[in-house]
Image 1 (tube, rainbow, N blue to C red):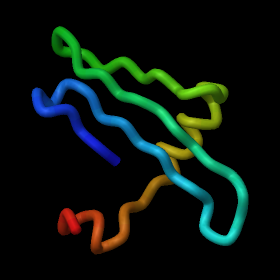
Image 2 (tube, rainbow, N blue to C red):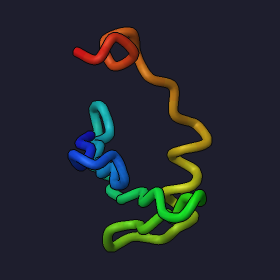
Image 3 (cartoon, one colour):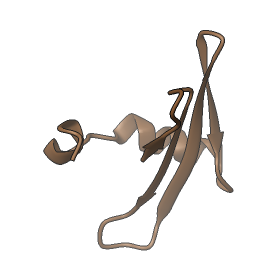
Image 4 (cartoon, rainbow, N blue to C red):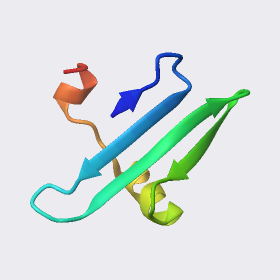
Amino acid sequence: MTRSLDGRRTCLFAEELGGRDIVSFNIYRLSGHLTLKPCEMSSSKVIDFLLGFRPDRRMQEGL
């Protein structure tokens, strides 16, 4: 996961543990709302990933 210096864009690329699946998207914070832009995959796949996402302790601590 990376964030732009101005904080308006977050990019995420994730690989399935022990598998071959990936998910990749950008989230833009513009004018008080969020815009989700999947990278070469369906929006439903990205939304399913986001709804099921649970960060591990290292991610929560920013490591």
